[in-house]
Length: 341
Image 1 (cartoon, rainbow, N blue to C red):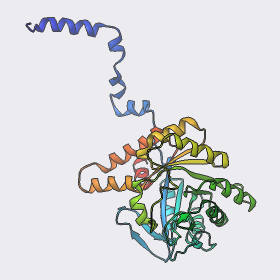
Image 2 (image 1 turned 90 degrees about the vertical axis):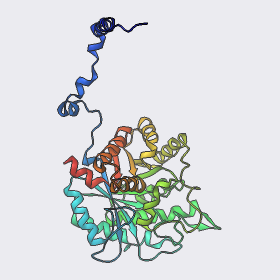
Image 3 (image 1 turned 120 degrees about the vertical axis):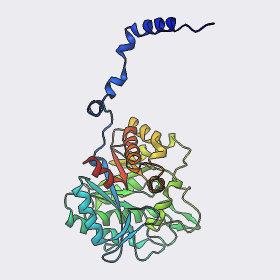
C-alpha cells in the first residue's frame, strides 16, 4: 500500500475539525508559570512543616551528623538559636529528640524533670515563644539497650512501658511542650498518656501519635543522629510490617479512639498510599514523617551531581502533601521554607 501524503493531510484535517479535540487541549492551562500557579491542585507552605531538632548535653555544641549533611546534634543553647531561625522562616513548629549523657535500663532520662528535652523545651519557649514545641515521647534514646520499652525476659514488655511513657509525656508538658508525640508503637500508649496528662492538669496538651509507624530500613541515619540503635534484635515486634496496608487503618482508628489529636504516618515517601488511605478515612489532621533515609538519599545523590537537590526536594514534599498530609516532619523544612518565601 502506497503512502499518500494528501490522504494523510485530509485525515488530519478531519480529525482536528472534530469539536471535542480543540475543546480538550489541556496544554492551554500549562502555557506559562502564572496559569500553572492559578490551577495548581496542591499547595505547599512553610505552615505545613515541622522541623526536627536533636538536642544533646553541653554548651556551644553543634556537631554535624555525618549521614545527614546539614543536620546537627545541638546543645540546648544552640537548639534555642536554631529554633529562632525556624520561627523566622515562617515554620510554625519543631519536634525535639533528646541525646542524653547517660542511659540505663529504666530510661530515667526520658522522664527526668531536668532531662535534656525538658531543658530544651524551656529554652526554646523563652527564645521563640510563638513556636509550637512538640516532643518525641519514646524510651529508645534513653535505654542502654536501645529498645522503645522496658525489657523483660528478652522481650519488650508493652504494659510495663506505658507508665514510663506517661511519666515522660507529663514531664514534657510540665516543661511547656504544646504537643507530645508518642513514637514507641506500644499498644494502648495514647490512652495511657491522655489519662496521665488529664490527671496532672494538662488537658490542653495535644497528642500527635505516630499511629502507623513501620519497621523501615529508611531510619538508618536517624539511629546515628539520636544514638538509639537497638543493641540486640530489632523493632519488628512492635513497629508495623511494611507489607501491611489495611492494618494501618486499624492502628490509626485505635489511637483516635484513645484520644489522639493528630495522627502520623512514618515513613512518608514509600508509604504515600497509607497517607492517602488515612486522609480519606479519618477527619483528623494527618502528619507524615519525611524520614532520615529519604533525606540522606537525596543529599547523597545531589553531592554526586546526579540530581538537582532543590527540585527533587520540592517534588518529594509536594508528593507528600498531594497524598493527603496536612503536616510534614522533614529535615528539608528550612531549605524548603527559604524557597517558598
